[in-house]
Length: 112
Image 1 (cartoon, rainbow, N blue to C red):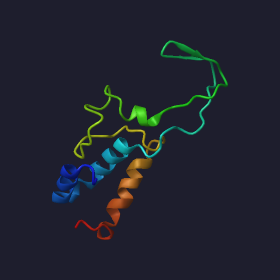
Image 2 (cartoon, helix red, strand yellow):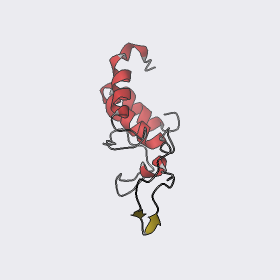
Image 3 (cartoon, helix red, strand yellow):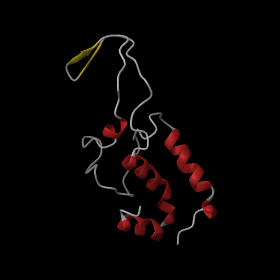
């Protein structure tokens, strides 16, 4: 947030936006850069390349979170963006839990 003071100021002005901001921060920073050791279970084609069954596949989650087909202007932090569907945790449902945990203890957050 220190490198994006205008977004930080928006959040300070309206702390009720914290749930949306958490999702966008997770998308933007992508704390998990790759998914955990997936293997193909059958032959498959990705982008025209054949990947045989049983091969390890490296999935760059951080790249998916910056996909311009999914997120408008993906290299810009926008705390009001609908960042639902990001892959910051590579497991659906984890990020909303993180946001709820942060929101459930608002007195533990210092805004000044």
